[in-house]
Image (cartoon, rainbow, N blue to C red; front, side, top):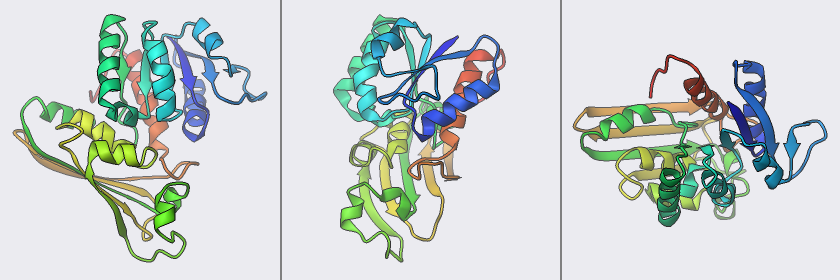
Length: 260
């Protein structure tokens, strides 16, 4: 399998290193597309036409929602499957429907790895029955919020108590905080829907990890879980994201597939 990668920030670098270290037989990272080129990465290109000419079988997106909207349609129209990290782009209903139709038409797959959240296999299974409630509470330390509109609303350096900055739907959360509430979009797509999934977002000076608490009630029963993700080089995300991408690649590569 020939794999391409879009984006070479904290997540992209981690993914690239893990793919190259894993040395899975028949799986090769053939190119990395980035806005800026590094002489230390020979397979990197800033030319998307060149990237496409290499004909990857699967492309991993790790570059943000704008990159999803720009590049994923071009890939899918060529029958190239894509693993999307920035799932919040699919909160745009028209874009979601367009990509669904094109993927069917061109025999491509669009994968949404669990990334920072996890538990999506159980939630998708529960959706085979009915879901009464799906709720998410996300808590992140102040360092995760620099460069967002929250920085203009709160004194992040002096914040001393946990402060709720958002309550609403998964669609609204992912659109308002595309870097910090991306997991809400994944949960909404997996569960009861983007407009039915309820989300709270907090800035919490008492924690040093990104915390997600999920609660689901449906025909299959009631379950809840808490995730405390170790932060990555980018405090808005966690090291588990790249690990989740590697799990997807192993699922596509290995004869035994567990937890889908």
